[in-house]
Image (cartoon, rainbow, N blue to C red):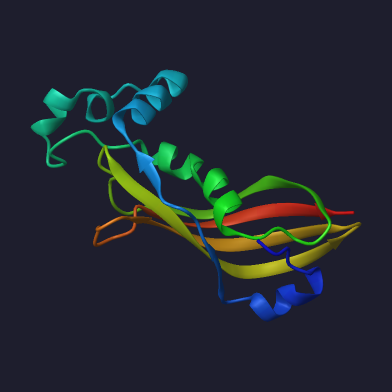
Length: 152
């Protein structure tokens, strides 16, 4: 992936700047997330009980899907030229629109909404991120994600 020159950012605003690889969200991943977060609600970890819900089976935690954005950004979005590091700066908006069934594959599409030169080699980037569910009618989530990249 070719790094992006900071001088090119203004020309990319409003455009899709990347698409991640697909990630499988299987039951083992859901169970591991439940263990680490101590969120063991049955709709996530009990396939038999979850069959009786409108979901028809277990679903991923919304926060699990959200947490995969870090991985997806590495796959899908080129870093700035001479980047030293990037840090999560937060979210302006997050909406969970559709459940991710156990075994489904998800990927993210990134659209650059804003790029602000904060000085000292710091760039605040705002992306609209849409996480798609393979074969799904609606996205799993849509977020406005802020990331700070430091260039040297």
